[in-house]
Amino acid sequence: IEITNHATATLEGNQIFNNRFGGLFLASGVNVTMKDNKIMNNQDAIEKAVSRGQCLYKISSYTSYPMHDFY
Image (tube, rainbow, N blue to C red):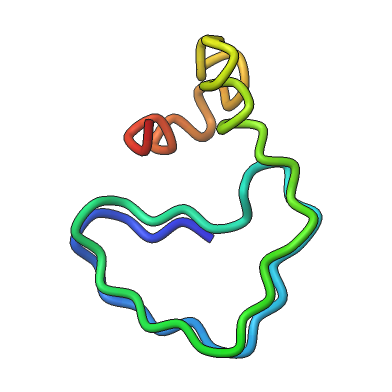
């Protein structure tokens, strides 16, 4: 789930799991209300790449470039 800049959202009763990335990405300025969500067992590929100093394009390519705003 990706919530972009200055958006408002309500996430309730979701199970977010087994995703290549982190499962949930919140851009700056978002207003999110969350209740009873389970976020687990995601691969966190973007976060791992950042910690290793890798180029994010290598991980997400041109199809997911908005994720680059988060790092």
